[in-house]
Length: 155
Figure 1 (tube, rainbow, N blue to C red):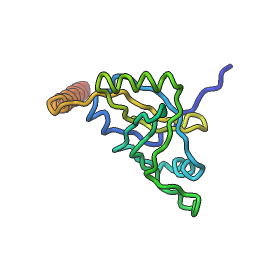
Figure 2 (figure 1 turned 120 degrees about the vertical axis):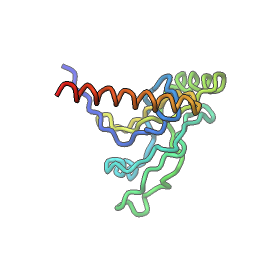
Figure 3 (figure 1 turned 90 degrees about the horizontal axis):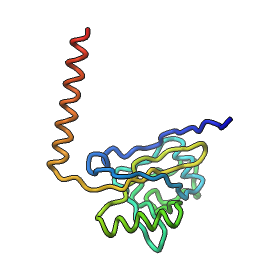
């Protein structure tokens, strides 16, 4: 019998869903040091302005803020340092090709623990225009109004 995997969400990039259309997502590992993992266990991370880039065949996570661990003293690293993402070479090259040719962006969508390992969900995203954002807000409000009306009617 297979063991059930546990997934504990650390941080989510809600702004990414507002600013981009997410076409595809992929899971990647992340290279961290011990005090960063301890800080993540306390839920102290921010993905709001983060993005991914491909440099020399490696995918890097930029702009992700992981707060320093309080008891880490000299072992703490820079909270905004560039972190390497762990993916297969063919996955990196496929993503890199899509980014260069079709104008996609690589945006981290979520940071979570999968069993004992830290994983990042990376989205292959296309930017939204202002009218797309307005249409999304209008449709979300309409759905909310419909649900509210149905709830009142059923009571």
